[in-house]
Amino acid sequence: MTYQNYSLKQLQQIDAAHHLHPFTDHKELRETGSRIITHANGPFIYDADGTEILDGMAGLWCVNVGYGRDELAEAAYAQMKELPYYNSFFKCSTPTPVLLSKKLAELAPKHVSQVFYGSSGSEANDTALRLVRHYWALEGRPEKNRVISRKSAYHGSTIAGTSLGGMEPMHKQLGGAVPNIVHVMMPYAYELALPGESDHDFGIRAAKAVEDAILEAGADKVAAFIGEPVMGAGGVKIPPMSYWPEVERICRKYDVLLMLDEVITGYGRTGEWFAAQTFGIEPDTITTAKALTSGYQPLSALLVGDRVAKTLVDKGGEFYHGYTYSGHPVACAVALKNLEIIEREGLVERVKNDTGPYFAQALQEHLAGHRLVGEVRSIGLMGAIEIVKDKATKERYLPSGSAAVIVRDHAVAQGMMLRATGDTMILSPPLIWTRDTIDMACERIAKALDLADTDLQKR
Ligand SMILES: Cc1ncc(COP(=O)(O)O)c(C=O)c1O
Image (tube, rainbow, N blue to C red; front, side, top):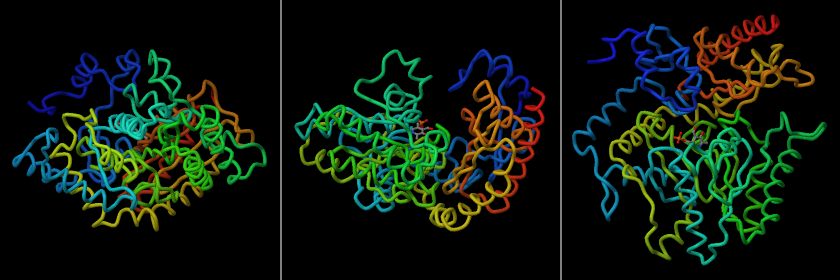
């Protein structure tokens, strides 16, 4: 029996009775009911009422080639018929992860040529943490195991992912984080730059926080620094261009590995295949997932740089780590086809040369001047809109985050899906968006801002 046999109301009731959603207040959800998305095509998603919504979040930062790609469904079907599953433990492999590894080695920065698979970004970050600690142990320095991260970072929701991340509410529910992970300031100029401080200087100061943490622990105790090139879930916080090269310089100076979490930015979002290329750095590990399959299958790939891989291979000994679905043949078949589509349609170049710059200009022209908007910013097809009560003082509406939720709800009612994170609206659309789609999005967001403004004036 398919879902068409159920009314929207019935689906919502069953959902409320049995389904525990991620990152959800379940009491509240039971009262409001969930929005049930039933199908999608191109840049649009449709709910069970048939309402068409422009998807400004590419699902959850992942559906980069857009919805309704028959080729991806066909790749999965063909692989399922031929070999739905076999493991890559015990000296076995299957063809699609082999070929995908070759492809990823070609696309990745040139010092990166090895891949470890999982099913999610969280798993890949668990792998990354295990791997960098294992690396130092193999190098005879097991005490070099501390990892430096940032406040408000998001690295996933497993215990290791949460521990690596810097989300306070998540830490409060953790009941004890993985030890030896510390968090330093984030490169968020809008709130943290000092009066009169240039973007460049702020970037250098934020990087200095990494150096301070290394010196405080002692470089001989620090394994690695981990960061999202652009903090995504934390509010599309785009660092000044001075930040990453300085962080890299500091890591090299103290012989600390550099781990880049590109779960959101990987595969084109910033206008290069990887944001490492956008920011001109050479990380030792690159965590990727999401857009690797455009979300059509769960798959993550930890890309491992030559330095770490060489030690792992040369020193030998079993690395006691892996997942049943590491290198899942169907997920890898879909990834191969997805990368082929991205290349064939020139989506990365399009973001870099056309839609990315147009997106930045459109946010600036249509939204930056609005009374509720403190700042707009973007890189490639990833953007943020800061919601404020007072543009000049950057004062926010209270309670914190409430105004952004009002904007979000109006936006969805206008047929525009975007996300509210704290007081920031975030956008991360499919890379197939055209200039016309960007115009449509800005129009709908502007309308939502006007309606929210009216509501907020009444408070
Ligand atoms: C930067 C980053 N790392 C890791 C993750 C975790 O990925 P997953 O939800 O697939 O476990 C996410 C998810 O949004 C992310 O944005």
